[in-house]
Amino acid sequence: MDDLKLVDVYYTYDDGRNALEDLSFSIRRGERVALVGPNGAGKSTLLYILAGLFIPTKGTAEIMGVRLTKKDAALARKNVGLLFQDPDDQIFMPTVSEDVAFGPINMGFDESEVNRRVDEALRMTGMGAYRERVPHHLSLGEKKRVAMAGLLAMSPGVLLLDEPTANLDPQGRRDLINVLQERKETIVIATHDLSVAFHLTDRVIVLKTKLQYDGTYSGLVQNEEVLQDARLELPSFSRLMQMWARETGKEFPPPLTVNEALNVLKDKYCCRDHRH
Amino acid sequence: MSHHTEIDQYAKGSTLFGFDPRVKLICTIVFVVAVAMFRQIEAIIVAGIFVLGLVLASRIPLKHFAINYAMALVFIAFAAFTMLITSGPENALLIFLRISVSVMALLLLVTTTPFFKMIKAFRALHMPKLLANMIMFTYRFIFLLIDEMERMRLARKARGYSRGKNLLDKKAFETISATIGMVFVRSNIRANNIYDALLSRGYTGEIKSFGKLKAGPRDAILALAFGLVTLISIMVEMGVVQWTI
Image (cartoon, rainbow over all chains, first blue to last red):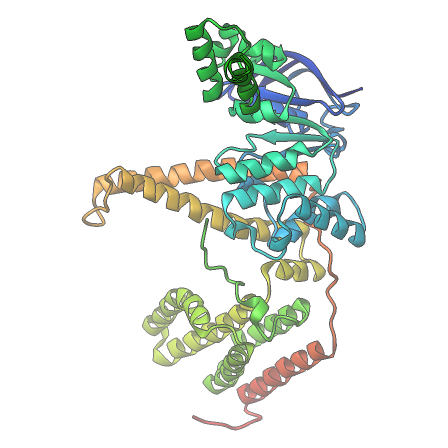
């Protein structure tokens, strides 16, 4: 079953700028998809449509079976959670626990259920000790985790994440990846960080106003034209391994994670030589 | 990380924290309206002593209270100065004391009550939803605006800008006006983003929260104290209680 479905979607801003053109794809339940592309490619606009915040100028969008129209946008929004790039846009309430409770209260849950959801979401994001803290006194990484807890407390079927690891320190980035890795929901991540995308998703959509590529990473990394056109850069270890392959004449697909690179090295050099 | 001084940052440590915000709000409004009508300095002094007594009893840091009062003092002094020119020193003193006591009473209310509870009290007293939301959004945006302006100030400084030599420095004026324009543009973008974020979390026009407001015996005592002092002040005002300074 498709959680998200776009057919011939166009989106034009009030100033006449075309943000999205002729976009069609669908995302199945439980699928994890990365949305990549250069700045201004329309990634955030697309996330806003998938979140039910923008209505396509032309074409149709369906969010968990609800066709996105002005009338049904509020209904469609109940099924998706959007993590904003800047947590200051999202965090509003005076304390962390009240902010996390904001969504569940609006969903009409009673007090005990809201408290249970808040506790659970704060535990999952490692923010349990921050319940009564004032959110705008927290660090950026902590704010991102509070914003994430706010989404998880709503238990949406689809998680839409706009640059979730932007401006995070390595530990904050790792913490967020760990939280997301355990999720079972459909996840769409808009990111420039390909190594995060490799870790968390299996499918990649390359966007540059129009759809440039939709498929697996192994297909993408071998498609130089799309990579260059979308200004994408593989992680440094992938590029190193590609250089090594060229220098030594060995043939293997570029590794996407550090573990894959290690396995290639073991396979092509270290352990085989040791075995000999 | 931002380090703003918030008006309600000491509210939780205050002895007046646990009182029902509706009772505090009604008492303060009645008190302020009464003080605004006083023409006798003695009556205002009685009211002022009561407010200062409550400030001391509330255990909010006096420095925090004084700083907030000092911010209002500029406007109070301006009003008093205007009266001094038009109506003489006695009326100037009267207006100075009247506004000061009223401001202190309102400051006491907002420094001892968490801001969000104040909004709840407004709503409980049937303030229109739109107005209550506007107050809340405004309070939220103040800090974002300050952050925005601070970032722009640092960016200007990092690129060699220094303040103009005098008030008529054309270059400084150009820079400041461009900054103000940009702050408005950025604030507009930020406001739209916040609204979108609220919508995506089910916002339908009202900020909801749990925790019902309850008035108890101690709220009745507080209301009684306010009522009694207001009554005594009115009696002094009307000359029922004779007291001259």
